[in-house]
Image (cartoon, rainbow, N blue to C red; front, side):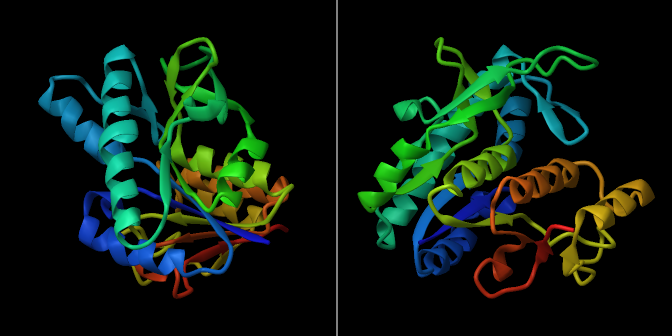
Length: 256
């Protein structure tokens, strides 16, 4: 059976009118579904209102204790429940989860090396059997970007990483297709021109484009996660925009 995993973020989850048709079309796909969402823009906006500095390095957020509290409020609270409520309204029996719920996603705090990322979690384990039971009960799990370490500490974890690790873990039980939906129509040859979508990309292409500075910042962790998912058994990864989630298009990431 096919399992479709959709990660949404950016302006998509800031605009429920934009998100609704995406979710409607996604629910029509044949097979089981999981949704993963971020919320970094809203977390940054709230942090600024609260006077909490926003710190980013290479597209990744540095999370001190105050930033973790904001991330938990936005990701596990506001956005998670908005998406769950929206799915219920269109016939999707959704269940909103963090990694701590049901002990489904364990992580550890990222060790300090050149950069101290603070309360950022690197994934250790996805409880695939527990998620499989939820899917068999006809729930659509909705995961936010908050995990835990099993010792009472919540951790902020990159939503693309969660999506790719979920896809990898579930690929032992399903034929998994992973959709990474972002503001742009796909990976662009010119970041300022939405018409310059690169239709296909393998790891060799990625290395060259990164060296040339065509892909950079927040796109780097997305592509790193996409290629790692393919290496671990995920059938297909598509980086796409809202309109192409279910209509085709975007950038197909494939193995060499």
